Structures are given as structure tokens and as C-alpha cells.
Length: 340
Image (cartoon, rainbow, N blue to C red; front, side, top):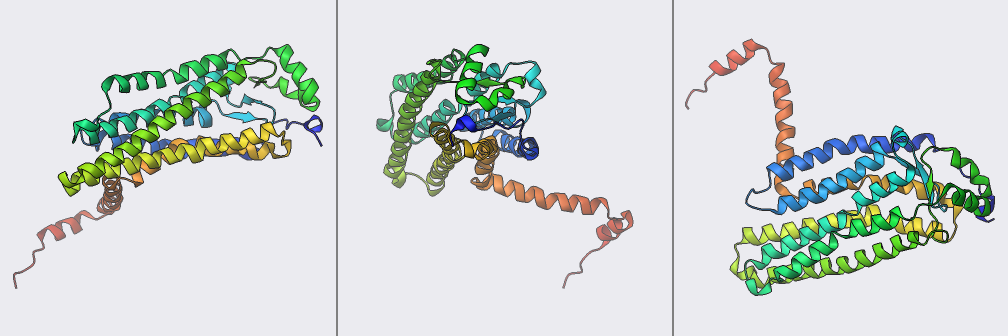
């Protein structure tokens, strides 16, 4: 059976919106805790906290947008969907998609900036390994054009209402009812080539700067191995742990974003309409990216883990102290142990 016989769901399942909101509510305290630790318990002389805060802030904005502000319900293999929140009264579906994609695209330059910083921190022990400043600034500036270039392409990929009706009548005749949803938006690379431009430009940017980031990462490890004999065990361990932490942060977008996107692409490309619900549910994983990143940052840092354990021990003590009768406090304070 082809997708021409597919009847689009009239609305999301009952669990869909509840799950997104639950992810957002769980994510908020974890993200704030991570921000607090990064900003106040990372060494002040280190500027690495700015990189971490930059990346975490972008991931947090994307997650809040996907789970609370503009949660979307998507209808793959049809490249379309609609905003489920009340914000659909303020913004069109196309505006929501463009702005959400624009924010999300800043994750690439923010991560690259962290790798460059770790490289410079290691290269300070032996200046001959440093990458020229002009090259670094050029790479950082060029990478920061990624959100603007791809967002402009996406902005130009909008389809008119007439085009949307024609596409649905031709390919998904049983889905015309979704046009009644406020904030509905869809894209088609055949009717508007700018949609293809979005994918191609994103592929080029991500490929080039991922390779550069991988080179910087491996070169940083190489530098640390070379200068290891001249470093104290504590200094070497600090740089090594920071690199491990950064690599683990890269794993989160791969698992939570890139892998779901590739699976969704397969559903769209092969017209696997039977897997529409499964493909849409992958956005649960994508919306949890910031929470997962925060947990990685906290759990891979010994200082942060120690702080959490200390707080967990202090809270029960404070509660017990609150409910202890005043007479018992007086008795305890007056009690002394006699010398043996």
C-alpha cells in the first residue's frame, strides 16, 4: 500500500503532549543545577566555563522550545506538522520552524568553540603546537555563519497554501483535513528547491566543521601526551578529564539528535507511512538533549558529584534539626565526654 491510501491522524495521541511537558518539567531543575555548577564552581581563572555555558544555554533554549513553548506534532513521511501550543496564535508554523532551527544550529559553533579552547589550553604548555590565531578566528567566524545561512534557506523554502493543497491532493489525498490545524506547515523539495538547499548547506557545514573539530580533538590529545612528562599529575588529569567530558557531550547530540534525524529521513525517503507514529515519537529523545547534556556535565565532574552528595547529606540533617525539640538541643550542647 502506498502513502496515497494513508489517512493522517487528526491529532496527536493523548500521551504525546503530556510526555513532552513532562520532559520539559524534569529538564528545568537539572539544567538550572548544571548552570549553577558550571558558573559558580568552575575555576574562575578558566574561561572554559564560558564555552560550557554557551553550549548548554543553546541546548536549553532548544529543549524548552520543543517541549514547552512550541511543541510540534509531525506527520512523516509528509514533511509537515503543526504547533500544539497556544503560541500558534502568535506565530505561523513556518516562523516557528525557522526560529527553532536557527537556535538549534548554534550548537555546532558552540561545541567547536569548546574544542578550540581545550586545544589552546593544552598548547600553552608548548607554543609550537598552537594553531595560528588568524586560522582560529576564521574558523569560528565561518562556523557562526551556519545558523544564518541555513535559516535563510529555510525561510525561503515556504510553500503557499495553493502549493500545499496541490501536494496533498496528489500524494496524500486523505490528509487534506490537516490544513484545518492552526500553524500547519509543510515542505517539499520538488515544489521549492530551497528545501534542498537547506539540507545540502547543513550537510556541508556539519561535515567540514565536524572534521575540523575531530582534528582539533585528536591534536589536543597528542599535545597532552607530549607534554605529560612536564606536568604534575593533577594538571594532566584536569586537562584529560576536561577532554573526556567534552567528548561525552558530543555523544549526546549524536544519540539524541543526529540518529533520530537519520531515522526520520529514512521514513521520509522510503515513504514508510506505517512508522509515522514511531518517527514522531523520536522527538521525545530530541527534546531531552539538554537534560542529557546537563547530566553528562554533572556526572562526569568529580567536584559537581561531590557537591551533590554534600547537599543530599545536608538536607536530611537540616530537616532532622528542625524537628528536634529545643530541650534536646540544650541537653546535647551541655553534654561533655569525660577524659579517659
